[in-house]
Each structure stands twice: as C-alpha cells, then as structure tokens.
Image 1 (tube, one colour):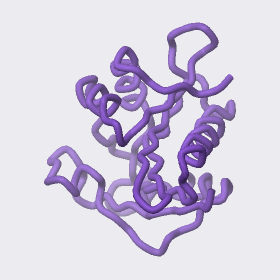
Image 2: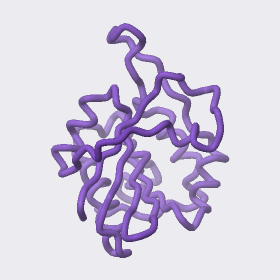
Image 3: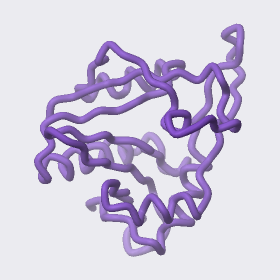
Image 4: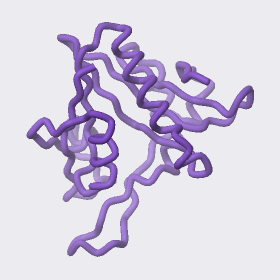
Amino acid sequence: MRSEIATAADARAVAELLDSADWSLPRRGGIEAAEPLPGMTSEEAAAMIGRASTIILVRRAGAFPMLLGCIAVEMGDAGACTISMLAVASEFRRMAVGRALLEDAEQFAADRGATQARIVVTESRRDLVAWYERRGYRPAGRREAHPARLGGDDARLPSALRFIVLEKRL
C-alpha cells in the first residue's frame, strides 16, 4: 500500500484527521496535563489541497475511503522541502502508518529533486522529536514560531508555543 495525493474530495476527512491528532503541549509548570492546539477546518484543508506548492499525501484503509493518515510536503527552493502535518487515525497508531507516510513523503520530495527535508516539531513533544531523530532527522540549531504566527497573530494558538527545526539529507 502506498500513499496517494489527496484531492478536494479528501478535504473534510483530512481536516477531521488533523483535528483528532494529538497536537497537545504541556501546560505551564511542566504538569503532564495538556491543552489541545486548534485544528484545521475543511475549508483550510481544501485551500491547502488546492495549492500547487503543497501536496498532501494520504493513506487509505484498502479500497475504503477512510483515511489512515496524512502528511504534507511543501517543495521549496534549492533542493529543500518542508514536511508537516503528519497525523494518523487513533485506531491505526503504533502500526507503522506514520513511518510509512514519512517515508512516502521523503520519497515524493526526492523524486522531485529535494535533497534536504525539514520538519518543524513542537519543542515540548520530546517523544516526537526523538521519533524523528530515530528516522534520521537532526536538530538544525534553530527554533521558529508556529507557521500560523508567521502570517499574523492567530489568537487560537498558545503564546508559549515553540518549535524546533529538524533536518535530514534525502
């Protein structure tokens, strides 16, 4: 089973999948409780699917329309790409779906000339950073604001949210 490029018909399912993902971060004081991050609307997913610069790959449960997971690939300049929005349906986690999606995204980018992949991960999710490191990603030595904050202040996002940049040679 391989990933396929999402179409406009997948927008709602992609948004629901991303909305159900665990995008949580620890609360102030390092307490283990978490506060959820805002999800993506169907309209936002459709707009992203319609952009030429970003491709969303999806995996389905066989011939069924249900999505097992999704991942986005944005081709950049100078042989670089940004991989984001990796999400796996809760009932399919720990079944290597995320790993397969990541591998497919990397191959998709490499087939289009990318030699470097970049991922921006919530800094507080040390388990997720470690997961990417086990797949060959290394800290790039810099941090970034949430992508939504780069284009303006998204009041839905916690102000303390920080991201670490990880990179991998493809």
